[in-house]
Image 1 (cartoon, rainbow, N blue to C red):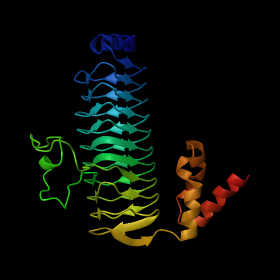
Image 2 (tube, rainbow, N blue to C red; image 1 turned 90 degrees about the vertical axis):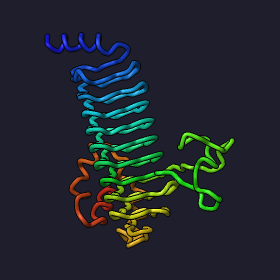
Image 3 (cartoon, one colour; image 1 turned 90 degrees about the horizontal axis):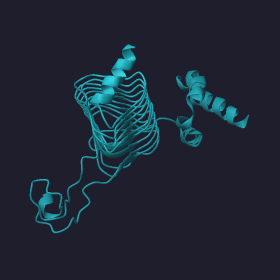
Image 4 (cartoon, rainbow, N blue to C red; image 1 turned 60 degrees about the vertical axis):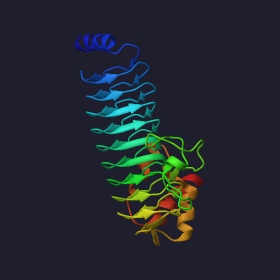
Length: 273
């Protein structure tokens, strides 16, 4: 009876939206028309703009703002984070005050607090440390001025002398699967980071990072490869990050140990069978 009354109140309060079963929506939550909310969602003081779709059991905290984005199942987005024009897969954790604009983020990944992402594609099983900035935009170094008022029509300063945009201020960043990026990292526009790579805390990454390579420093340089080249090649071909949850659960004990040959032999024997 109580749930039916709650659904009736939501229907009156949030006209033009679609809501699943067993949702809880705190009174100070603002939901615009056209929003879709999955079963079991818990929304506490957030704002959802048109074009937003939330998956099953989504948890949104105070001050979260989402617009024109798709959020997968079992995602938790913490206080004062904002997500626009993005797509998140399932089982993702986003800590407070993160900003995502034109981002795709793979499942089983997390962003620590105050991460800023612009025009970034991120794979599955990625871990990104606090206060990391990826895709902050570019300025030309070979023109007389670096100010965008002379080469951009976007009017970042409220004025533009350029009749047309003549410099690409943004280039997408691509981050592979199972990548660990430490705290306070800066990654320049246009960079690609391969699967299994690790970026040390405080690094400034201006060039592509090969798969399973550890980099660090300012500017970031290779420190070492995580595994021998034949092992890296086998891991890349295996692409375990694409497995379903049941297979990953079976593989857990082989993944959570430091002998890659043991894991690879086990996985390749399954494939052969």
